[in-house]
Image (cartoon, rainbow over all chains, first blue to last red; front, side):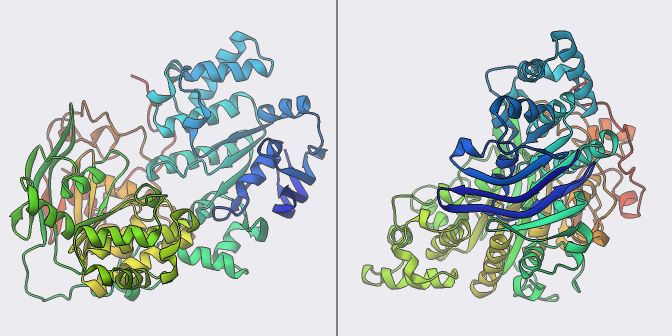
Length: 258
Length: 350
């Protein structure tokens, strides 16, 4: 599945907050969208999900999935795409789960909303849980009984169970311990390799982006200042802002000479 | 940032040993059934000096910082500040101690009153401890803001008018206002954007040299410890897994946990990426810790001995303490299984 963004503008009233000339995520590609807080990364996610209107923003330009325009689609068609073909995971997985329902209740409800029968939904949820290295028995627990890393993996399992083709991952590891982060990054890479999932990975952490992504777009104040292959951006940034972000990452020194 | 900026004032080799400013001896902290900190001993040298406490959530690093500040009681052990035990201090002596040791939290929003102007927040600290006569408060406030790299005009602003990095500078200026001997820095930059983080780290590095500060730096980020701390202790479930000079500990970890944690740190430069060791599963429940080594259920190098015998923290090289039965093999380069597919059973499978 290919996601293409062209001439995208997101505005609050007259004030533009996102202005993207072009950005694409190819089939089975992982593209990083990097930038600091306030750079417009998350508004871009909302616009792709067709949810920018819910926070009072207006969207113009083009966002297309395999050539099909999303902007201007009626709500019911968008709802069908969202979840089914485009899935999203966020920084705080605990916010994505209602604390008073068992985790599995929400997973099964989402699957049934997208047309699966009860038994199909349970089967598929169990398979997806195993794919993210969790026991399906965790579906019987409440969100508070799972760790942040486990909840994030359940959120990814839901995307898998829905057979989503593109995953928007908005700072999905920023709230996790570094060991758990390594596990989730490995899982995302694996999803791309095995399932051919396309991933738009949004993060303020350039080191994480460097490790995971094939290509990177660096955002500042709503615009992309530079994009290209990850290796190239990380080793030879052309934009001074990218260079500044890279220089700011704390380095691990292992000797007095470094 | 080069090392001379942040590590300025690093103690020179060959200087005669001095009594540490703070000595933590066999500290234990208990929360109900959970022993959050268990038998931890650490030294913080007289400034300029930084000790990094590194570990995952639940490792006890923040609890140690709170025990040092007397915000949580010690269940056992002693904490000596300039040789005097502070665990039983009260009254005026406790107030003096709390002036000498200040804390900077992760989230400055929780320490700065949103209704109080920045200048008033700093003046309040100056007034509480009668640092300067009242007529000099405004002047001192301006000087402190300048020292923290802020325009003195910020005194008339409210916290919400400042960026996260600027608010953290204000929190640092306020902590410094009472002329502390030591700071507890609890994840001081983890809520900040990467550029703001770099600037605050640089500020801490400059202040440590100028004010000859000692600090306990609590962080989950080895990079931050590497920039600012001579010594680092790695904690796992309330105990020290390994401690030693930061650069040595990071270049040749002696505990498999340090090795895994180190390998999990994302690196911008492809060349700097070590082979990743993925730890399966989560740390065990602190209320029912496993027998033997606490790390053995996740350890890639586990042997039978680890399941029954608690490893003592012992010296493996000068200045380096490790609690692992296989530390010498790890240091000698014992092979770590890297990222083997299907390494472990899924989480939650009993």
